[in-house]
Image 1 (cartoon, rainbow, N blue to C red):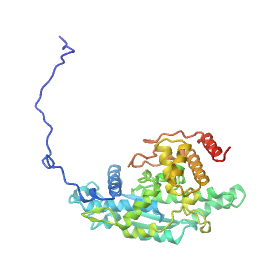
Image 2: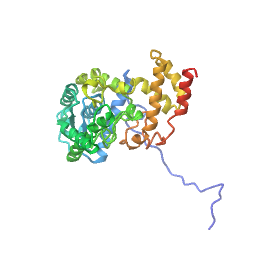
Image 3: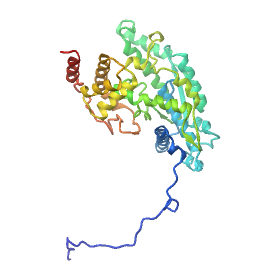
Image 4: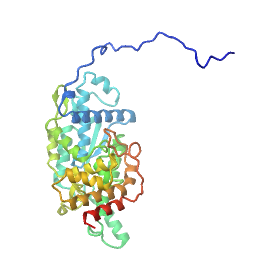
Length: 388
């Protein structure tokens, strides 16, 4: 057997040409109205997450979604995206063909009917929950057609506090036990909502956003509970902007804007975890820092890999109306919380990657679980600021 000459390998010739799409050959499709919108980022976000939710649902062989609807911005965004998915599907000429991929769906009359077949929500109240968030959750759930429950978990929460107080031999109080008393409220919400998801064979969606993930502003095994985290790659400042847009304008569906005006009950609120007593007037930004500042720090430090000194100069230029000492306090808080909370990010539910800033350590942003936390760099920066 004679091997072929290495310089002249054998060649097999066949008649082949790439087939041309009869529809698009020489005639690329005209852009749809939404593709020419001045709010293209909001349009693309709405469609990308809606498609991702539908595809994840189809491939997971489950029968819909379950969300712990707190009456705040994050959970509102998640359920609004599910409803937008319903609107986008039913606006298509091939809607019936698409819905065949979900054989458990009965022929929906409208987007609210389809949402009701897909989505179950629950508002879980403790004594620290307020009427504003309870009403907001109910109004939004009704507007989109979700099957909504109101669960009073105050007795469950208080039984845990009493149980542990007796075990340690003292009454727990907010002065000594602030974090523990906040976290137990978030954690007692997890078993019930998981149970609803199990009963209905649906996906439990976590509602954490990227800003919270960056600094660990979430309770592990509490509000992080879920099998999918649709908005964990989105920063809070932009998410709130998107909710305001969805309230007044919304995506162009079927050639016309499709807004959700009931989101006004969400958008008028200041974001709060609502875990401390009402007289504490707890807000997310009071616990952390203004979300726009947090997001600029996170983008520069994590995406762009800039050190504390560089990031400080960036936020001084971006936010000149804040005193330098306050900006430095926020900067130190960010780096400390970022470094301490990698273990939480390791345990977050999978999230969608929608830009280049995702913090998912499984696929996008590796970081050591334990580190020095930039202590030396932050101390040097502080000393320089203080003239030492």
